Amino acid sequence: MVKVNSPKALEEIIQKKKKESGKEGTYISICGGTGCIASGGNGVLEAFQEVIADDPDVKLVRTGCHGFCERGPLVVIQPQGILYQKVKPGDAADIYEKTIKNGEIIKKHLYRDQKKQAYEKEADVPFYKFQKRIVFKMNGHIDPEKIDDYLAMDGYSALSKVLTSMKPDQIIDTVIKSGLRGRGGGGFPAGIKWKSTKAATGDKKYVLCNADEGDPGAFMDRSIMEGNPHSVIEGMLIGAYAIGSDEGYIYIRNEYPLAIKRLKVALEQAREYGFLGKNILGTDFSFDIKINRGGGAFVCGESTALMLSIEGKVGRPRTKYIHTADSGLWDKPTNLNNVETWANIPHIFNKGVDWFTSIGTGDVSEHPWGGSKGTKIFSLVGKVNNTGLVEVPFGITLRDIIFKIGGGIKNSKKGRKFKAVQTGGPSGGCIPEKHLDEPVDFDGLTKMGSMMGSGGMIVMDDHTCLVEVARYFVDFLKDESCGKCTPCREGLRRMSQILNRIVVGEGKEGDIELLEKLASAMEISSLCALGQTAAYPVLSTIKYFREEYERHIKDGYCDGKQCTELIRYNIDEDACTGCSICAKKCPTKAISGELKKTYRIDQSECVRCGVCFNVCNFNAVEILSGSEIKEKMGE
Image 1: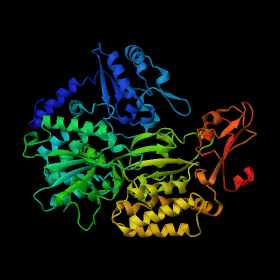
Image 2 (image 1 turned 90 degrees about the vertical axis):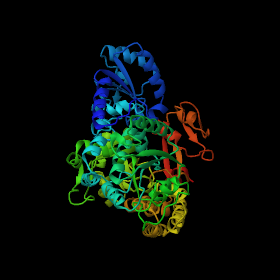
Image 3 (image 1 turned 180 degrees about the vertical axis):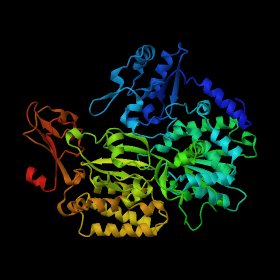
Image 4 (image 1 turned 135 degrees about the horizontal axis):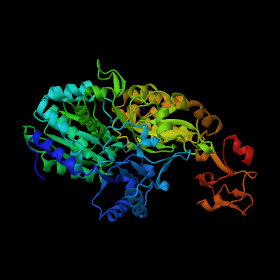
């Protein structure tokens, strides 16, 4: 591997790698993201390696996450774009012989939607069809541990462009004009942050990447780092040159072993090629990146807590009257952006500001806060048919994400209906059906009582209790609060006490009003965004689902039939066919009866896990709450 010492040499290498990539012929793309690996992806990879070993005309590419995680392991036959899902190692030889050699489609491996329609090509599958992939575009085509694959896709060409034809101020001005806002949750214009850091006084400046990603259910940043780590490195290089930094850190949670491994490989390869280190591309610019592992503290996703953690101190937020652009890591001017923000940077310089601003909402020509430009990656999970990572343009509606890309509500044929969607992670709000046609962007979600956050999106059906949802997130944030400031520490503790009483039927008159007062106090006086936004799940659920709180308190009734102390499972004698499946699946053996006769539940043994309800094919198991329990069971 020879160091690239000039932009001309880089262009020659890019052209060479394009010819060597083998992407013009047949190649098999196998997802090597964490989700597919957990489903047996490594075994699938090894099986294909064996069956194509003697065929020089077929290439094999182990890629990062393709996004459609629940359907893994995923295999795509290129250039036709044929998608096979839930592939097993034993399927490799069949796929090779029938599809690759003879062009035959194996129907059993195709994705089928809820109407049983089969799709041959990845691009036609609704999950992919309605997305707009920019940051994720390379994920299904390159091996994240081979820098040559990134170079074959014009990797590091944006860096070459800015080093040879742009001055730092021009670079910053371009980012400002693009309207790129931070994808980590705050939505602060990236270019403004860069400008402030460059203007700050100091002989040493740092560039940081926030890869902590502590939101439950969120794995956007992990998948970018696992699938295309060089895009993040290239973005940080451009930012460092613009700001005047020679040292950077990627702060990544230690629970991401595969992402850490691939980042280490990518950093080492970038150094070998000369993209990191001294005199990059033969210029006076020098920069290198170190990895710092976080210990799993949610609060260390906050900028100042993250920086203290890197310094080896307890990660606790500090007051904001001193900006990190002036005094951040080791009291030096510091610029922090998250993984997805950095990964957008090369695209902006390769394709231009006009291209980037043509995607999204609003007008950023007058002010960087004037809109939401580009795309956003969401972690779409919950009671939806197609779960995984989706990249969509700002301005798309919640309805399109959930019902077109997500395929609608799971078990809709059994009567399940959409109830709410929670965005923005633990501090986000719950949005009801009446807002499904609202555009998804930074300002729109805030107006609805939620937030963009890092990109979590949890879909809930009518068997979800919104009071329980609020309790869950408040308890999570209570445990993750650093405890430094009184409003957050005591406010979350008190909220938790109230909500935990309500969900077991011990709520009191005035509890709702007290929750609202606590939320207001926390929002005004908490030190950092954790406390300031912690009450969003409570406030949004009270705003849109206040009657659920009232029924919990006044009637002991749970609308979602989810609060275990307020519900009972009962078998309807008229509907029960005596199939016995509920008795066989019950983990506590609380269900008894005779085959082809009515079964019954022993309430003293029932732990209300819901297994019987989920496995019954005849709707014989019912969930009762409030007065229904007395009416039907006499309790």
